[in-house]
Length: 338
Length: 221
Image (tube, rainbow over all chains, first blue to last red):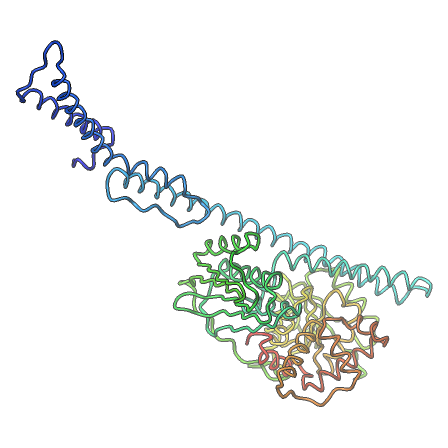
């Protein structure tokens, strides 16, 4: 075993032992003697020897132990907020082993945190999905039945009852609209039924309809396929980014684009709004980032006051899935034969 | 319109909804419900069944188990001499409307206004016209207004002052009913204005509408 790889305890022992041995050797070999009544000159020599020994010991121990202190200080400053930061290993032992161990632990903690976040988000999405489905399939259908029943009654009821029936019918209709709105907020059915393009197009239409800013969209053709999870992440990030634009940006124009870059699919939401120097913590940025991590994606946000904001998400595409074939043209009028 | 009533098939996985729709349609002398199916696959089987006889119009729910309404519509459209199709759906989203047109349906009726729109939509489908769902209408109109603002040439002749008013309200997302109330005209008149506006924009049947929507980027091809 090399000296450098010795455990810390043995290293300290070794250094101390070496220094004492050196002192003992000097005492044994040097032509010195100490009288019973220590003379001033002898005391001075002893003092010099002792100082020399202590200084040598201190210098040697410092070389070995100082990195440990430095690493301990760095550890205290390392937060879990910015994932991915790791300590720089110092050049010498035993600090670098400590740093390596600490970094390994950070890796484990982050992996753990990321899977537990993924589980929480997946559970949340699944739950939303279930509730939305039940609202649609149960409550929605029942209200539809009520609505149709009231309509049917209306044509057979005596005249004096018609206004009340109409009022009841309108209430049923309002309730149905509300159920639909809630279900839609909970879970974008369009993503599941019609795919990412349609879901983003629907987001864009909703955004334009709110009339806050003009929106231009660019969807690349022949984009590689994404897993369902990745599609949901892209959708949620686009949704959050557009919500932020509508709420804070005061933009005139927004670009929404989905393009291919190598083996990644890149979503960009760029606005020409007021931008900001510091991202507000409440603006869902953390949520976007965590979602991106779930599918191995990268999220970057650049924003400067007066120069708008750009949110960019790159997600790796699924290698196993085949490319999406281009959808054939619209069939001709009446004739749907191809 | 022929003297024979239109033979309608209802496809919805909720028996009670089918019953409600049947009651509404059978109040009309020109509509007759001849078959009901609980999902897309059953609908296809029934269409092949000689005992059911010819079907002129299929009313399909979008969300169904086994085979969704959109899948079923695509399958039905592949048949020789396919019947006309109408989608009946909970989803208030123009993407479903355009996707339905692409799948071969003539129109899209929201369940929350089925009591008012369904009969009109059935008749429009049988006339070979597209029944345009209000959300899609406002998306089309907003795009049209954007083009005018950018100075692009747009098809169609100039709209009347009344049609302009209706157009503006449609663009703001008002429903036919709200428009009728705002302009104090009847619902039927609003529907007529809507149909005229579509005709003047050169978008009357589903193919023209779908092409326009794809070109305008309202849906992806």
